[in-house]
Image (cartoon, rainbow, N blue to C red; front, side, top):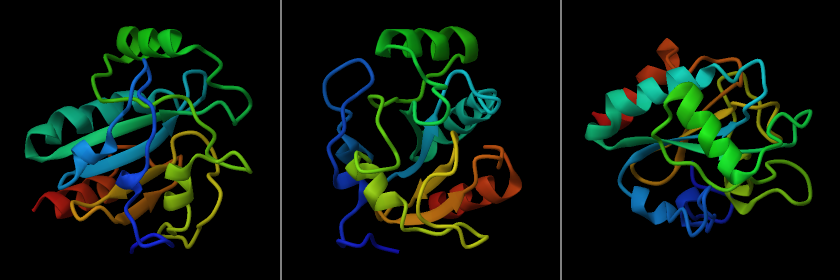
Length: 167
């Protein structure tokens, strides 16, 4: 599926967590799992599975892209430095992270404007439901899958979708 304006989510500009540009164009030709993340959520332990996916498939042209968001009960209140320290120290995160953004509402980041039109296997499209909602962008730059926040990163359907993009 292409986005409503026909361009890839990887065409948007977004800052890196610790300043500068995240330069999403560097992921052209790769598979990218975009996940809105939070440090103080019941789903935060999913960082473990996300990091395992990143390590397992990085050499095959895959990355996880963490997008901190504080829109769900204030579960990502930290500064960029605090978020980076928490992710590194607590979960050993090595995958790239963007600046903290809004994923819903009138201030929704353009990245999420391009992601939220895609429906998951249950037919849900539109607003992000909670922290750790996942979008798989294929090597061609289009959204190819969406997974609910409760879907574990290493779930069979997530791994199968990633492997299909890396085949």
